[in-house]
Image 1 (cartoon, helix red, strand yellow):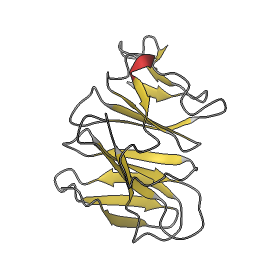
Image 2: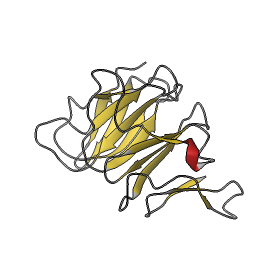
Image 3: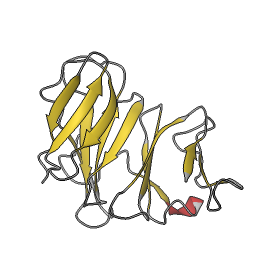
Length: 171
C-alpha cells in the first residue's frame, strides 16, 4: 500500500498500515507534492508516481527502496514529446503491459490538446518515449484516466466538464 506525501515523497507500508516508511527520494524537487500513484496491474514490481510540477517517476522494485526510483519525465528516444510543465493529475497503466502508461495533466496551456500522454518502453524503461494522445479533447484539465481492462485501445478521460473517450493507439 502506498500513500502520496505532501513533501514530494511516496510512503509505503508492508504490514497493513502498522507502520509507514519513505519509499522514494524527494520526487520533483523541493516544493513538489506527489499527486498521483499507480501500480501496474500486470506487475506489482512497477509503481509510478507523479508530481504537481509535471514530473513522473517509475520504481522497478515495487517501491521498496529509494534507489529503485527513476525519473522518466524526459523521453530518451528520438521524437519523444516534451511533457507540459503542469501538475500531473492521474496515471493509468496498461492492464497487461507494465511498460505502457498514460498520464493526465491539469491546468491549460496555449493551443489545444496537451492533456493526455502515453509513455512506452520496449526494454523495461532503459529507453522510453512520450506521445501526446489528446487530439480529440478540448483544452480543459483532465482529472482522471481509466484504461478499458479488456480493450486497452480505449481509455476514458474525466475532464473538468465531461467524460471523454480517448484512443490509446495501444492494443
